[in-house]
Image 1 (tube, rainbow, N blue to C red):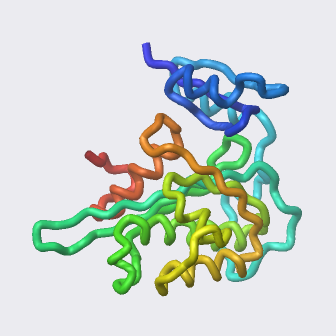
Image 2 (spheres, one colour):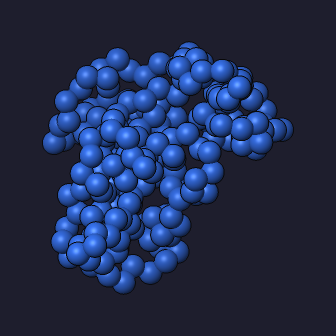
Length: 219
């Protein structure tokens, strides 16, 4: 029987598909809270049973100016991009992100609105767009500190200056992060490693690249 391992307090809270992945987050972690479930719904409920997010965030419309409110804690963002090359040679690029607060999903979004001159970056253009879109949403909702989980190292390295930004897209990205007003903590995760939300944004980004709706099946 498939099990879902929910980590409520650990190195990286979330839902994992194997005990080995769960153990890596909780082993020797002070005050770790985790539990195995036979259904994904029960695992999500366990995570959500911690501190619920502010109610106004569930239905608040996107604003052009940051909301004046206390910053939320434990806000995590998973991002990903995808690139699909058609037989004609045209590239279809998608992006996606999911924002989670204390185990409860606040918002998710995906799309394929990538600047034409950025297409040469392939899926990296999608990953960059996902970060920028997510931070825009956070600013509009008064969130000033986040942890971004990503599987491409450049997202963190360009933003922190560890890698030199040399193209118009990466220069714009690095500058936008610096000017965003949001403090970002970066967490590198392995792609296709069983991390629930990382796998989710991977699927959403591929769906977006193919022009599918966010809930449609993606091969």
